[in-house]
Image (cartoon, rainbow, N blue to C red; front, side):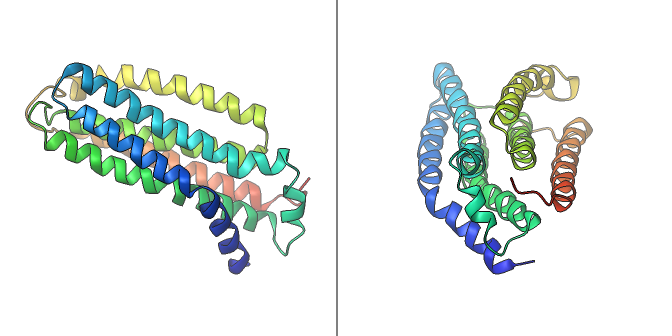
Length: 224
């Protein structure tokens, strides 16, 4: 593994996408302020803005750091460097996740603080909110994996659309689960077996998708 080259590619993507982190954090902070405003309209506006920021940031990041290198014909130059396909994939996966996780983790912590620290918002929302945020990261991981493996704009956009539709279905179904929906308006956060089971499924999907991507990419030899 050419760690020096992998680190160089990660730093390159970080340098060109720092503005995305700042923008996501700024808009995310605005969303959290709206969520904690104490009004129903403010809460829903903030929640929609927060989800939009995270989903949009993930989609843009994947498109900009992976797909554009294929469409702009810069990938052949990168692959002319002393770099294997696995090393290139490693740089793209780690780089994308590091960049995305900075605003994601900050806004996840901010969401927790906004709910727990606002009297107008019931603490019962905490498990539901955390499940939704982790699901966004799960969908982002799948989109990233498809982009890395296929380098296809069509396939990636198709998975983005399917992922967003699934998120809507996920919101609908999880909100109606007896172990979750009945507690969202309660004064206490209920972390029960249903919540931890969904968390476990999400974590398993993330790990399996990343592992499968590395395995498949390690078998590739054709860069074009």
